[in-house]
Every structure is written in C-alpha cells, then in structure tokens.
Image (cartoon, rainbow, N blue to C red):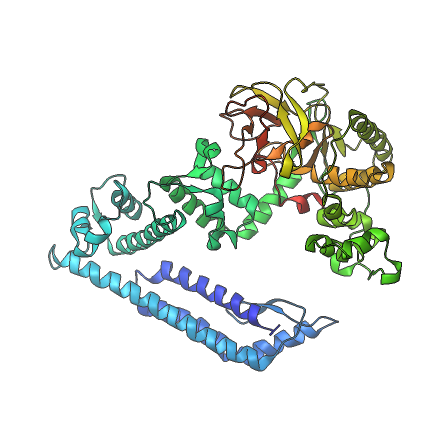
Length: 564
C-alpha cells in the first residue's frame, strides 16, 4: 500500500467541497474573487506540503502504529492517521499531480460561470442597454435551448424556471444569479434523464426500472448502504412500492432524495441518533408502553474490547477439530473461508462475537451445504421451553426488573389452516398455502411465539444455550438465520426478532429478474410501515408458496446497531 493515497483522495474531496461552497458564495459576484479564495487555500497547502507530510509521519509513528490513512484539512492541519507504511517522495509527487487536477477543475468551473454570464448578457441586451433581467419567453426561445427543449416532457422547463426564480408561475423575470442556478438545475435534470435511460436500456422515459437496475448504478451503490438505499426507494415510490418498478417521475424524486442523503451533515446524523437513543420508548410484552434504559446499557457489564485488541488465537493443524478439517477439504470456497475464520475465533471471546462471527463459529455454511429437514412440532416446543427457562435465568443477572427480551404478545394463533411448512426446492424450507387466500386477507402475524430482544447479547447467549441443548448443531444455525433486525415503530431502536414457530420459514420473493415475485406484504395494503402483521397483496392459490420481500421489514445491515 503506497501511503498517502487515501490522504490525497481526502484532500481532493476537501478541496472539491471547498470549491463548490465557494462557487455558491461568490460566482455571482465575481469569478476573480472566487479564484483568489480557492487559490489561496491551494497555495497554503502546497507551500507546506513537506511539513504536512513530516507531521503525518511523526504522528503516525507514535506508539506502535504506522500510517495508511491521513486526514488533512485545507489549512494543512492533521485530522487523523492510522496504520501501514508511508513514503514521502511518492506522496509529494502524488500531491503535486492532484493539485494540478484540482486547478484544472477550478479553471473549468470558472469558465462555466463566464459562459453563463456571457450568454445572460447577450439575452439582456435584447431588452435594452440597462436591462439586468430576462423573461420566461426569452429563455424558452433562446437558440441554445431549442434542442434541449425537444428532450423535455411537458412541464419540465416550467418547473426549472420556477425552482430557479422561486416563483410559483412562469411570470416575472430572471436575474443573473437565477440564470446560473437555472443552468445548474438544467445540467442536473439532463444528467438524471440520461442516467434513467441508460438504466432502462436506452428506451424512452415511459419505461420503468427495477430495484436491482437502480441498485447496480455505481454512483449510488458504492456510497449508500442497502438499508438506506431501500428507504430512499420506498419514499420515491410511495404507494407504488409493491409494484417494484420505478417510473421516470419517481426516479427524479429518488435522484433528489439521494442527493440530499449523500450531502447530509454526518454530525447532525450522529446527534439525532444520540438523541433518539436517549429518549426512545419501546412496546412491552403486555402492550403497555414503558421507558427503558439506553440501548447499550444491558446490565451484563460486558468487557469492551475492540476487535483489533482481541488476544491472538490460532488452532494448529494437528489440533483442528474434525468438522473444521472437513471445512478446509470442501470444494465450496465459502465453507473453506468459514473454516479459516473458525480456527481464529477464540471461544473465550464468545461474548464479543458479531453476527457473522457467530455464523462462522457454529459452522453455518457447512450446515446449509446440504438440505435441512423440517422441524417437528416437538422440536418447536422444546426450543420454546428452552427460551422460557433461559430468560428466567437471565433475569437473575444485573439490575432486577430489566427487560432484555419478551414475547411480542400473549396471543396464541393456529396458522395450520392457512399454511404449512414444506420443502421448496432450491429455496429450502418454506410455507405453502393450504387454501385460497384473497388479496388483503391477513396471512400471518406476530404472536406469543414472536420473541423480541432489546439487547443483542441476550440473543447471542440464547444461541449458545440452543447449541448446548440440541445434538443437531444445524438447529443453532437455523435460529441464527431465521432472526432479523427491525425497529418496532418509526424512528425506534433496532431490535433482534425471531419466531419460535414455522413462521420462520417464510421465504423471500422480489419483483426482479431471477426471483419469484412476492405475494405477501408487511402491513395492510395502504400501510406506510410494517407493524408485525402480514397480508396477501394479491390473490394466492392453494399450493402456492408464500413469499415476501425481506427489505420491507428487516434492516439487513443493522446488526451492529444491536451490538452484533
């Protein structure tokens, strides 16, 4: 790894941001003022680059750490640094090259402003020597706009005018600053239109795009976690979310939402999250609302050890258990990778294991390499009994009265007259309708067998208890992958949820190529969120498999929010 590559990228981002901010603040006043401010920041950085690099080396070399990440602000102050090796000569050359690129970008931006200004002056000259504004009709009839107007749908040009001028009609006049804003909005719209047509294979804007098509758009998926991406998708589609196809108009809404998300102030996000966690309320087992303590105060008094500070652990070849040896001998790369991780997972660190550490520790890739059997009713009863015994013992640890886990409700429901477990081919185990189910009819709901965990470590402990109790290690893996994370109300904290009945077998479907389409949704057809009840959103025939899009309720990347 050549040192400062990350530092240079960060510097580029800092200076690019500085350039954008300066454009907004000064471009309409004078390009010379804009250039001088940006150039001053660049000159300051370049003049002190040797000193900056040396300070980075010194700071990173303190203690036992070297450097591979260095954050530097526009004044040349070090923000952060950490691990790997740093080579000053390479760094200086790369910094010089990066400064050249940034200077080119500045020149191009200034040129764009000058072009806007020149065009605007030509338009205002038509209105008289002292004119400083133009009209809607002038802009619409401008020669440079004729080809662009052919690309617009009805009302798009008018919308740009209104956004740029802040007006609610096409009347009035436009100033130079508004003209610059109009052109920026125009560039953004044309980029969005081109992106949409690229995603739908070059067809016109009347053809929609799927979730996967949009997710595979590099500029979005590279910077946006899938949970956040799905939230933006749902907001843009609104009531059409179950159709699974995004129209051109909805894509423009999504484009704006994604831009806001990417430009959000992360410090505000952190503060909002801290405030939410300090003040959240949760639903208790008897459906009363109760205030509970902050989410990371689970009362277990667990040691707080960073992963990089875990003690070194490695099982030598001669000491490997037979199941890990079998993993290394597998033809499946995922199973071999799992075996490599298992030999490094120290059992004494079990209370620190993450979701994926647990997946590897219990050998779940190996367990799912062959078809898993359906659970018997006796096995479900045993695991429910084990949970109740476990939770009674767990209550004895820490402050009295602490609610670490509870049944979602006291209601007992027999779903056997609606669906039954079955083997669903390549999907594994699933649920099959035993009768016709009409669209809008409730299919499944959270019951007394639905377990909520306020704290990730309680769920982690239960998995180890299950692993000790049952002879079949695959049962632990079943309960591991059948668990998910979600909030129980808008803005609430993340909870671990599991069903201790055959409802766990509800498989995933999506309205996307390569998937079977879903026929069940979380919440009523007109609901804006999932509240632990599930309805048919299209007619389901007897014998059909029940399928749901997990993204409707499960936050697939939020396990770390629960301490896992």
